[in-house]
Length: 340
Image (cartoon, rainbow, N blue to C red; front, side, top):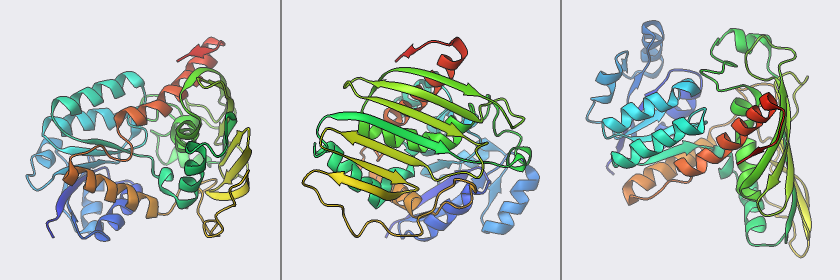
């Protein structure tokens, strides 16, 4: 079987997940990595036994690389994607695609112009429990949607930010609790509830010495008439599993930490084989997140390249959560509702 060559930008902890996934796939091969730190490059080269470049152009010039996985700081995702697109490389980017919708629009246009496929990693869409919820919501089993809530009430230590000074900055993280930790669950909520009409939010930095928020909340008005709420934090001891609540006229479903906690859907029994114990959540430890959903995302991206189609989450789909989160930030700053 012909293997698709993959290059990875970044050498942080998430790269271990990607390397693990690539090794599990028969049609993928890790060709090289890129780091702008010579010291990190040396360490990564030993760890992964793979060439690590410190010059971006030299990395992107490798003809064996067809797909670039972008795993560096969020505020540099756009810059790296633009460079990859110019070299004719397909792109699979970690969330968020970028930290503003304006930058995302530039990235989408560049990929289209250069004829490369763009995908974003929002891997929580791939869990079997979420897919079961998605099916009943989108086939109308819950009837008219009434209320959708997403809560990401997590905790991060002071060391989490101190050891990686880019975290919690506006330039490189785009914010904090919502844009970094919360974006996955916000994405799930939007995928189920539909497009948002307006946002009224408030964010604050109460505990951590960071630019972004460590606590925040918002009220959403959806275009279909439903309403919703968001809460997020990284200062909420001890950190609770993320929670998603979907209410319709025919029932409700609650997900917590990826597990179905309540299933009350008229005429539709709960899928008994889905609520597997031991599912991981990053509520208090970002390292406590498994790799299986990433594997599904990578498999889908490779299939998209071979079939010349859109991946599971393309640029426009990835843009939606960033639009809502940045609207929360703007609403908080201006102390007024923001129309999308």
